[in-house]
Image (cartoon, rainbow, N blue to C red; front, side, top):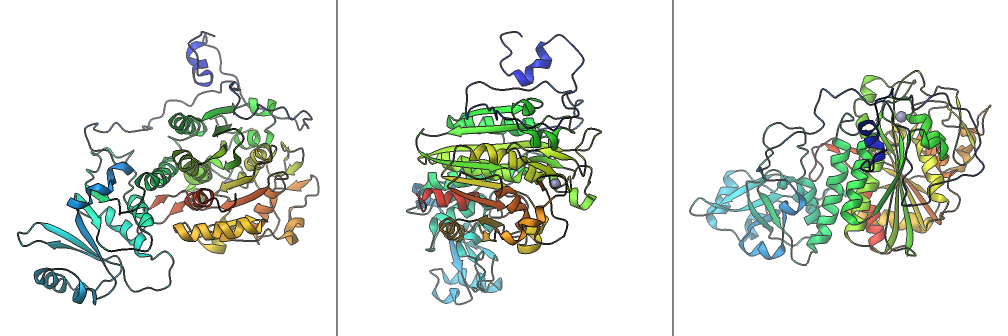
Length: 539
Ligand SMILES: [Zn+2]
């Protein structure tokens, strides 16, 4: 191979003499590996698989060429430094009509608000004119408290970010958590414009960072969430396992982290048999992607994120409605990477390890079948009760790898079960842990930063539901009940040495219509976990 072929996996096809592309995945024998040989964590050497047949050229663009002169929408562009507040337009917060009596506004402005029928209704807003007709400020209704934890005044600010005319604004009223207000503004300002052919939105509404708030800290959170949203919103045609690896490498390059990957049939040689089985029916080879960062010897924090770039359900194929959003089935990986960005950008003193088992759950002659028995990395056999319960299979191999070094904290993020949505709905992902201190601290952190999570039980009474008549376990239970609990119990079987383990069963998607939550991908749980790590609640 020529010396310039540094990126082996990419360049094999370009540099080698033309030869028929080998079939990279075939029938796989069930073998138990005793050596459990691994590429060491963050080894310098990459282990690469055999080059798969490439997809034919995509008729659709994987990214649009946008006008480079158009203002780019970035977190730093929407959240201005605090010093700029002196020339910013005030945003007043109004809970009810009483606001008019006490507000430090001119009589003309109060008359204007009355004429508009403004009574402080939640998320209503009115632009205030100055005497000369220029814009003088904004009044945002935050409404009467109804006990909804997501109706905080700070979050309401996110609704304005995408509505106000181009100008620099500042928060005129005190709020209990100004840092959350800054983050909410940034989260509400997000737009996914990668595939718009029209010129990108000329963004102009900026918020001066509220006094006393660390702008860089707020930006790290906003950037992390935007990164996660970008990854989830990207269609599967533009984000397969290889492109997900590219995204991990870009993130690593930004923070000086190391990345290794095991690709295609090399997954078998390196003992990731279930990840291989899930991804082998796709023309885009699966891979185990690993990012490492931080001081050796620091507290080890390991994140595992489900990276199913598209989930057809496999041979147990999903109906159209169930498949429509399946580009988001790598939402767990997006959450882990969003959290990773926050940790690295803020320089937390941890040894961070992120594992992303990435694959496309596709349908082909070599797809895994219902009733097949897989060997796992851990050495236990798993009967496939349903090929659509593939996430737990790739996670199990990744968890076994992550668990081997006994990290202080091991967290898995996954868009794992519809049952979690039936139980708690799309906005409140459940988390599962046996660790009482972790459960309390995480619930606390989730509340503080308004990234809601709710604990559900690892109820041992359901362990037997995973029994199989032919293998060590099944990947699903036969009945329809407690699906998210049983999925979590399945994952827990592959965690033995980590000091603390938590699993988040996220939706990874927002329906829209709420401030700070534009419709589309959402890396749920990332801000909550970051708060937990940053405050050192568990150290
Ligand atoms: Zn599935």
